[in-house]
Length: 100
Image 1: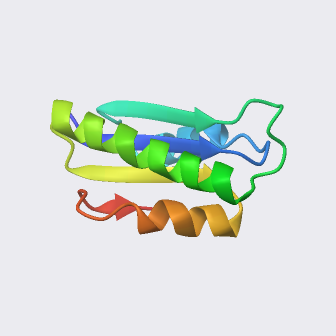
Image 2: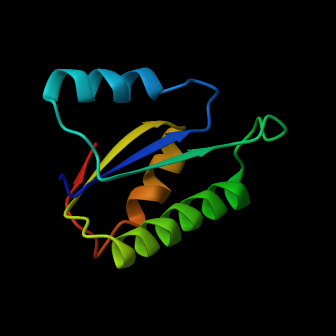
């Protein structure tokens, strides 16, 4: 069994699920665990406070997953604004290797 964690993050309305399926189909890699983050439709604009909240929630969820499961690698599939991508990346220290 794989020790990979697949993270799907979509806050722009673009669904990245097809990209995840294509990755699995072309590489044959199956995740040990899968987590999906998305915004409710009422949050169309990601401002500073929402962006920080999203980044911290992702970090907290990853830390819990890594604490509970033997995760050795993280794959992130995302459709997010550039500023949010930076905030998320800033919070990904002290984790297993991350593939974007």
